Image (cartoon, rainbow, N blue to C red; front, side):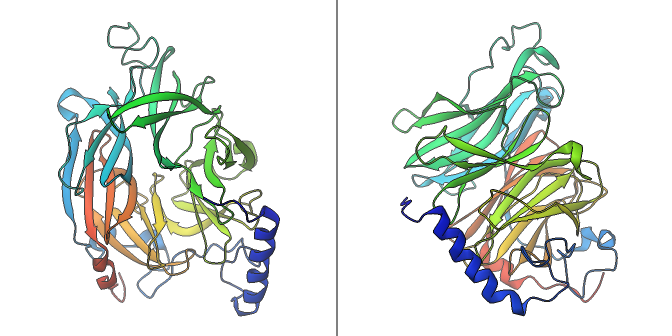
Amino acid sequence: MSTSISKFNSIIFFSLIIMSSCSSVDKNSPHPELNPDSPIMLQGDWVPDNPQDIDFNNLPRIPSEHVIVSDVRAVEGVNQHNYLVFHEDKYWLMWSEGPGVEDRVGQRVAYATSTDGLTWSEKKFMTPYPPNSSPDSEYYNTRTDKGNRYISRGFWQREGELLALVSLDEADGFFGESLELRAFKLDPDKETWEDIGLVYDNTINNFPPKLLPNGEWMMTRRSYDRHVFILTGGIKAFDQWESHSVVRVDESELLPEEPYWWVLPDGNLLALFRDNAKSGYLFRAFSTDLGRSWSRPVRTDFPDASSKFNGLQLSNGQYILISNPNPEKRDPLALSISEDGIIFNKMGYLFGGRRIDYPHVIEQDGFLLIAFSGGKQSVEVLKINIKELGKLTMPTAF
């Protein structure tokens, strides 16, 4: 990837685009520069005055094919933190697998592969057992700082190689003080994974790095004490980054979890945050300088179950968000559509009738693949023809 475009020129270029479009922006509409504090994120005749009153179970259905890749309910294990990628003509899927409820001593990272997204290989493990945390350890399947856990953190396709990011820390409480983000590299000939080292200390990301308009990589970072940062860099080496503060939990009205971001059509950035203070809504912030600084996160009118979400910009320019919008529970899983990456005007039902969470979505060859967890004990995949999204029609009201 060429990096000849300087950061300064990129920022100036995108600033000119913003200035040229300012006159056409409605004063009430959200805008990265003119109105970053607007709460508007969901609009349409079908949206009730209180968006939390949407009849989520009767949203229009989006057809899909469904498959269960891994299921550990019979052994009372955990399957969650699902991530997909398409690499070297096949799909790769990774997830956290371990004993007990979640993130206990002995948890490691599993993966499977598929050529069509529906028929999957037997699972294998890309990580060993964490240090001093194998099944013969007295601390296995407990929450204690005397044992460790790996947590799946996503695939990163960098310079033609496939890296798998995982966090490692002591399995006591939310995150341990030893928290670190590590990279495992695929040997494509042997299909084995090698731990190539530390990506960034005191870090758990939410999703793997994506490219910025200036050619840099960017990903979110949370520290063990749960403050939110942005990491930019990753060009010279997989472990070279600059960290920029976004939200401090002791200075914010929300308890920010699992942030996600994308690039808007004008080159500015938008970030969304799950609120673990359980406001029942997503929070949103903007950056006009390629992630170096961010506006104050504002509570939007987009309902949320305080659950992990994911999204992307499709090849046709539309943006989609995969989330649990029902504030009462993580059921159903829904797909929402936006034309500009800021305001969503359609929402469709994907899957439900039970607890569904931890989604990750990719687009490939005219289809969406969405991986999710069933009650934190199964890894499941939906395959959707993107043409079905064009058929989504909202009712006049709920």
